[in-house]
Length: 116
Image (cartoon, rainbow, N blue to C red; front, side):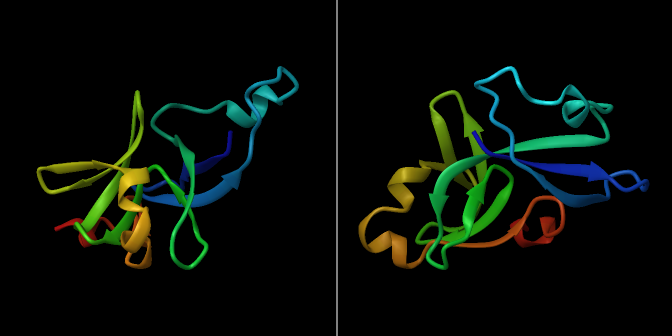
C-alpha cells in the first residue's frame, strides 16, 4: 500500500505535502512515521491508477474526466470519483476512451476552489 502524508504547517487548514510510502502489511514500519495529532496529519491512500500523464492518483486528488471535475474518494469497495451529486467507480472512469480525458488537476488541500 502506498500513502501520501499531508502535515499541517501551523495555520489551521493549511497543509504541506510530504510523501511517505509505507507497507502496512508488515510490522517493520517505524511508528514514529505514523505518529501525530489527528488534526495535524492526513494520510491518503494511492488508488494504484495513473492518469493520462502518468501521474499516480491518490484519495483527495481533484481530477478532470468525462464526468467533469471531481474528487477522488476512498470507499469500502475501492475508489470513486464524486462529481456534484454523481458518483462513479474510479476504474470505470479510467477505462477505454474515458482514459484519454482522465487527468489529475489538483488536490483537496491546495486547490479546493477547483470543486466550486
